[in-house]
Length: 269
Image 1: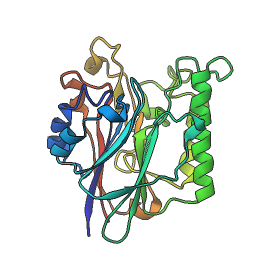
Image 2: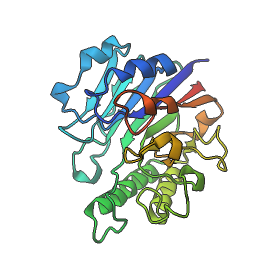
Image 3: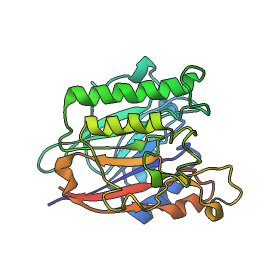
């Protein structure tokens, strides 16, 4: 039996917040860490520093100023070169690998779904249209491939699907990230791959659960107006091996914190 810890974090600039990765490693000791919004072109990615932090195997796709994904691993892997270029934009929002593990490879996908802007109307807001198109393409891709097997999907999916994934279901129904059309789209994607929500596996749907708190809040902790935008899904054949989870809420108070906090699950393979 192999215990595997996989964490995900929208780091909101890997170069600015690279020192905080030491705090994350001390708190969660992940075997694999998936990052989003690295905001770093590949030629400037701090590869050697991250290897020195305990991750000898690293893949990254980035661009200047925004987007970008990376996978840092203690476990050898092979990058999946055949995965789609979503919406034909080449905007560094997905990275897939096959982890080299006992019992066979494990497929791991790191996604950064478009945020979608402020207006939840695809006719007047191209950013929202892009978000819906992105999720629709990913859903069709999962449908074509069939139910996921020995696979994990993580990332900042920028949608809080459940009533208690947001601080106020009623007040956020017309706010981007919790609108009915987005929730339906994310649910369809999850069903297309027969994915199991690994964090809600541990936290009942009727309990509040957040991974993001806005920078706009004067006192984010006191107001606690959060949303669960960061997700870990596992294939059904891995669900029985889920052992524990962590949402590292203290990270929101780290110096120069990201507005997202790290999320981790541990599973036995």
